[in-house]
Amino acid sequence: MRLLRMFCLFTFSLSLISISCQKDNEVKIPTKTIEAAAKEVTDVYLGLIPSEGIQRIVRQADHFVVGEIVVGEKGLVYQYQPIPGFEGTDEVIIEFQSGTGSGELELVSQLRIVLIVTD
Image (cartoon, rainbow, N blue to C red; front, side, top):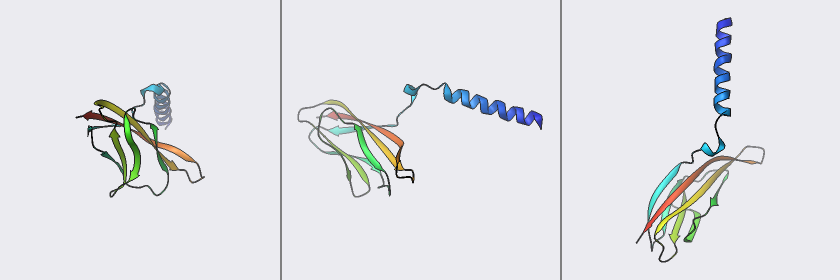
């Protein structure tokens, strides 16, 4: 029994050390890479419409005419259209927050969308 307690304590301690040693800049944001046509609006499906919480753009694309989250036929969609003449890579980061029950919102996840714009 004492050996089991020591093993559990050792395992718990290792997990705390592992968590505390992670650097903040090592957090990986899931990424979707999308090809976008230069003269068209591109829809990027984000998921079903949540019953509570919000979605917001925390980093907007640098070269956009249209760059917004809208409700589409199947759920939430990020719509993007580049400025005329732009070809290259654009990037958006969207944050998803959910209610905690106390009236406050907490970060649930983020999504990076990399848009490769070609003519």
